[in-house]
Length: 461
Image (cartoon, rainbow, N blue to C red; front, side):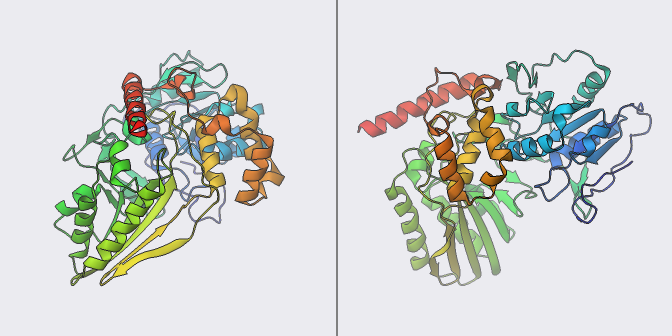
């Protein structure tokens, strides 16, 4: 099988060769490739590797190609991991003249939530999980048959879709990375329903083991990811762990569906520090929630200082780093129509906020600058009929992209009214998720309306 690389000198640009079709599988004709996305460490993601292997098991040969090499194929697949990918895709596809393509292009992946600005470059979007139906889809596309799946839409003249839900965990091992590591799908989805979380509301909770526990294999985070309330259940030393706090105060966390108390946080830290040697906790926190106040951040800082002042760790040494990201109103969640509050300035400094015997706590005010936060929100909320020029400007304007983040924010504000991207939307007005729906649409609406009622009741007290 031929593997194409966008840069032969990049040690991450070539992935391990996967097995050809299984014995007895029908050899399928057709030149098929998956695009190597430039901004990622690996040539293609785990999700794209699953699609690649599934097609190969069913008789296709699948290459990895650059945007420029795509013109050598009949069908090119694009994996969208993040909504932010829209900018690289638009820029790279335009540069590689995909608008003149003679091949069929299809986009999919977890980040494929609002891909419609790519209508000049991509023919089809696949929403939801694809692995056990992808061969049938590719067969139809290559044979020119009608595509009438409810989870697929043409990007030109789009139609309402219902994302294809998870049917089951993927059955086969997948090799990835330069060390030929093996990935096995042990879970998908989450047992919790945090109101802001796209993953929670768009992935069915299927897993091996306890269905009420969330454990991530750590490929994307660099360490095992668990819920804070589950840390104390581990009898062996974790060493490094990633977890989500998602709210400066208990008030915010309980309001938005993350029931983590300070007692739970303290118990997790105590447990990590009870093992000899060094331990490390990476805590992701969401800040700038609607309704967040300085008192909420003060509560967080007071907890950190009180914990380190009152705790002496005799066994292990624990380092805790808290990384803040600003709230983004992800589509197909109960908070999709909430306002996005922007920081007045980008703050990236890492501060040691508390330390004691055997423990150090640090946190970063904001790991994204305000421009990146706004661009993220634009990628989620743009309406292609009204804002396609916005995506083009952000993606391709050379002078604009030479500016600093603060200067880009200023230039963008002068050119466009950002209110339409950051304002609150009612549940009765048109919205981008009207086009890309999920089976939980009615539940999401009810939860969103209930949340608004709770917030208004608190504000009136």
